[in-house]
Amino acid sequence: MIRYSVVIPHHNNPELLVRCLESIPVREDIEVIVVDDHSPDSGTYLERYPILGRPGLTLIISPENKGGGAARNIGLDRARGQWVVFSDSDDVFVEGAFEAMDKYHGSEAEIVFFPTLIEVEGDWNPGDKLDWLNNLLTFYRETGDDSRLRCFHVVPWSKMIKRELIERLGARFDEIRYSDDVMFSMKTGIGATCVMVADERVYRNYLRRGSVSHPRAWNSNLMALRAEIGMRANKMAKESHSLSYDDAYIALARLFFMDRKTFFKLLSKARESHISLFRVAWKVCHIILRKTGWKGKVS
Image 1 (cartoon, one colour):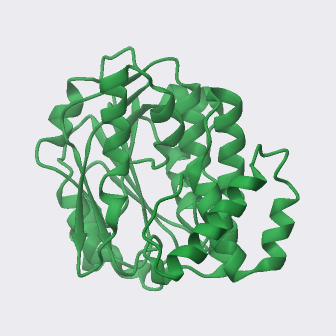
Image 2 (cartoon, one colour):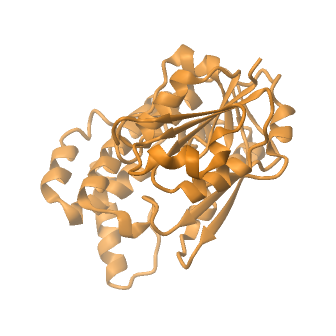
Image 3 (cartoon, helix red, strand yellow):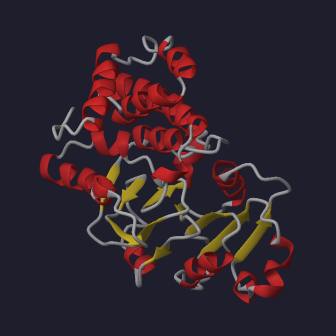
């Protein structure tokens, strides 16, 4: 029986992909599914990178470039494991990660969350990006309230998800260029009958320049997409746990300065997404105040 299906989307960064694959042990109960999102030279990968031909690894080359969400969906369609484990191709699993996961494979939980090791590559200072994921786990441990964890752990990695849950919910990734993982993560998090938080760290996430999460990568189209997905996420969080998805407000406020037409078009859907217009206005004012040198915070 396959215990873990490790799904890895990849595009045009084979050296980092090799680093990721080297962190995954070769075991009969682990299958690795690498989905290349139509990299320019992917036809030469098997010849140039022998690790892609190792036992238990399937390399799928997509006929067109459609983004990480589409690549993950292709991997999900091929997965056979009891648990699905996602990784980005530029991240790694820590030593002993799968032995740590083995402790939970018989768990009644449908999602097991693990603390994340986060490392910055280069001179980027990401601020609180280092803390927000692990803070969700800490909040759950301290309060026993799993609502924030279910709604806001909106990355697919650093967790193991029962494939049965994914199939029962019909959960798939949005096939878009950014935030493709938000709704998948919320749908599975909210839909799981039981979740668990582990103590072991199994995954190292690298924050680096060149990634889509880096501020220099943002443009009006990406920000509009981030705002639109954020509004969908806010609707789901409000209706399931009466929580607000803060990233929706951040993205809308930033979009105000990038593309007013799209900003107001999205605001027309505010009511159905349970978006507070007052809070959007306050976020916009906060950006203006920060630009003038104000050091305060806004909720």
